[in-house]
Image (cartoon, rainbow, N blue to C red; front, side, top):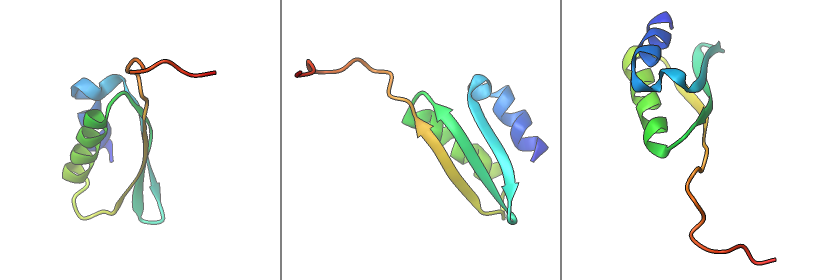
Length: 73
């Protein structure tokens, strides 16, 4: 799992708040990322580094784009 932490830190994703924990023989990834692309990158890296282990994910994508319409009150 140290390889996963090292690789995430070395990539552009290094500043993201993603945590990896071993739970019941599987890896659980939790945290928040700024885009769906970042989420996919984290999952790809985790699967590459932890081949053979089950990877569960609870990574939330924070929507940071401007609304495309006015909110009606």
